[in-house]
Length: 497
Image (cartoon, rainbow, N blue to C red; front, side, top):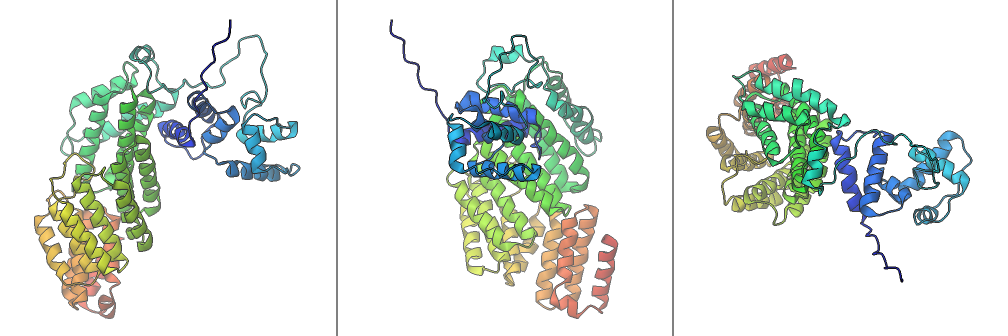
């Protein structure tokens, strides 16, 4: 009887492997140096899904291109004092297609991946007795696994998210809920998250909604009180949600968690940016972008690119800010809602203004005004961007471009600003100080600087203090450094530092 031909195994492109890699890395907080057993777990998942040979799966699990793998092998032989190899890109590709590898190369490749020839698929293990598992961590469930399978495994708690469980008991929830005068959480939130980490049920859409509620309340608290007291609890919440990724009960919930990780990473980046740590903020913004991409959310990814532009202007790099703002606009396309498109246009206008390009900045602001055709969703990440915020962006751009009309926009923004946005007044007061200094009014410029400094100190905003320091460098104030107004500002700046 003739044999039935078996269908060819589908091979996926590298992006599929990268999605598996990022999902598992994000589940443990994206460590800088992932352990070998975690990388082997990623390798097995890539092999099961994508059908590549084992050696290629190992390479993709490490996130390497072929050229990178070859370069790393050459560097390893040099570091170990071994005889240099003549390995080329073509030879590596031959190995990945199943062609033989010499024994001396097998030794170096095993060293490169911190594993053995059996795990690399270069040899077979014929040991008859049962062997201990190569990986002591349970595999992350397939997002498409059946509900029955998920329920059967629901009693297991992933070992590598035990740290997240610790943060549930002693981190975010207790930190935010302990003082009822600052934030009030539904007790059901605490109960449900505790149930999740006791292993009695999986993470579903309702659990994600509860986590979003906590993030939303933390955002409002930051607007009111500032960043300093929120850094630790928000970082704990981020670790918690990363640890929940393996518990997601389906592809849609997994994508929702990745979107939530993106939003939380952005929020934590904002807190660090406000506290003056631009490098850490930019790293978190990049993590937020990667998480949004994994979630397949182009609108959210464009939002993260917009924040990368914002942080670039804060870091004194307007050219990079313009580049990121353009990338954000291109990424958004038709996926973004009107308020988000408006904010992205305003961010682009801001980047051009800091770069001293008046024409492109004003055109971008006009586009932002046209996009403001609907009310902003108060539960969205861009909840803060309404008509008052747009006017503030326009005033900021005009003041940075040295145009007098900006003062009226900022003064009106301060009158219309939501009282909850306390810290925002620091930046706008500093800009009013710049506008006054541009007009040669030293006393008024210093008065605005002192107003900004008081709010910055009350909210522990390093970014706000830096804005006042930048105002102090204005040429008009430098020339008037012996005046009473400037001396009083210098005194308060010294105390603030």
